[in-house]
Length: 346
Image (tube, rainbow, N blue to C red; front, side, top):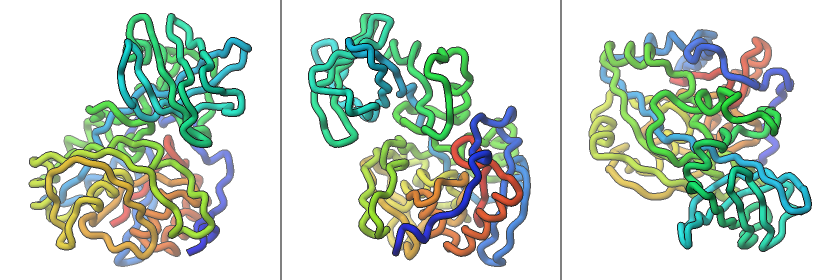
């Protein structure tokens, strides 16, 4: 398959720059795969389309404040995105990071992060990734809690000199059920849930089960091959508890909140759709032609063209149907991407 076949037109003004004032006030497009119909609704109506015995599976990973800014001795400003903590030694935390502008970074450079925190460039790991050692007077974890920023994607514009406490991104770029820290991007389908919507679902007999997948660069890494099948996903860590596995295995239907949840469930399901409790890493790449083993319904945001996320949605609902829905979303001025609106595919 050619990657160019998974493009679509999107005006820049439909890329959401801020979350809606109320989480569950997002718009929701309903796609019925069996009837090939599309409806325009509000997210708050989600409980009307799930039934007793259904199980909604959510990703409870918590986003860490993974974006920080520093200054080299030359005065150059460096933007750092933390990816994975590799080890802790000699009072420092060694992280795999992405940094820009990369052409200004060399091994052994020192980067002043302010507030008695410093980074040393240990090694270049690839064209886009570096290994850096971070030292902070009060500990690097405490530094991030105070001064780290929400790792918003680049299409959401924020001023670099805006202090973290002056933005609501650290709270809103986080699901209300976020629990286990480890993600460097939000599982965005979950951003729409309010306590009221979750309580309504429970009151109607819909089960809520949580998995954990720490969203890493695998989720948002661009597809750089012209042929879809040649793309290789980066690995991401996941956990499924025994209680969650039991709940899912006894479900009437499984509704996945997000592509990260979908990939996790499909990574561990056997050919009969049975889930075993486990932890590990997944690099599953889902694209059209994939046969889903466990997920019966999908709640998801509107994704970037040519992305692995968009291809997963096309695999689930059919490329032509998804493109039709996206064209309708553009015409009806839905908001797109992380802080945008969503669709429910049944």
